[in-house]
Image (cartoon, rainbow, N blue to C red):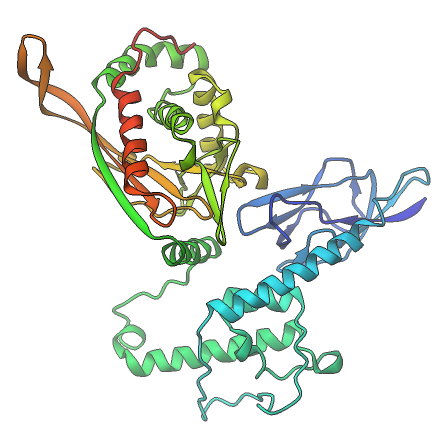
Length: 435
């Protein structure tokens, strides 16, 4: 028998680290290949990590709440002598990528955060002298905590480090964060006594996902020049067709046929007609995407929002899209999405009509350049044009809104794309089958 190390596997595009949520196996437990032994959280999804070996888990090298770089060792497992260990070159490769990630994180901290350090004499904390020689290296764990707490690099430099060569350790920054929060609470109590003293208001701490959503929405508004166009679409053919096929579809599949796959199909067709909406921006360069990967916003039971992606959506017919939509929505609500399910989106749709909303102005999912929101379908009187003249009839109407990045998408492209989605929906083939 021999001991091998299990390393944190890749978690999807651009993910360099993850946070340990739960250890699902105890030291000394027998484990098999593909057993879920670890649950982790990335900045995109919570997921379980399978074991790559069969043997005995002898020692955990991580604990709950640790931030673990991809490729670093997480556990020691006793296996048979003939088992091949994971590639020893992997940690070196990850270390190079980690170094680039650290530099990127430092740059983001320096650019993005404007938090100032307030000095509160009555709350003692030992700061590093401002003119002291401070070691500017910060570990990925320290940087991750700083990013989460919105602590800029200038503020990091005032934290007294107790590690090797006076480097800031995890305990140092957590101690500082606790001190910082205490100061904030005192300041809030002084500024707003009704909030903290008389009990009339409730203070709710944002959970991790809400913090991420908040940060991404603010970043998107800062990055993209948002413009929104609207159109009102006659959904009468689609509504009539769905009403006709939904009972048979449920009987044969056990699932519902919702409007979402029909809306996504129209968007995919319009992207083929206007491929310059399927782009992203990197500096002064426009990246035109070959794949059409449609993100679909899904509301979770806790009120948060997640956007799983239908990769290569243009390769699915309508029945295939319906199956994919139902599968992703179900796994999203059951917290069973994988990291890859949320990666690589090139265009996003949001069916806000599910909440009885008529219209909205959605925020672009970076680094995409556009997003479309579909409102509630309502019956209303409308003008019907016929060869014999115009008539007034009851139609099922829906507002569609298209937010796009005016840096690279002009009003003509944004408006024409929206009109083409409208045309595909209004000219829906009601003779088609869904099974």
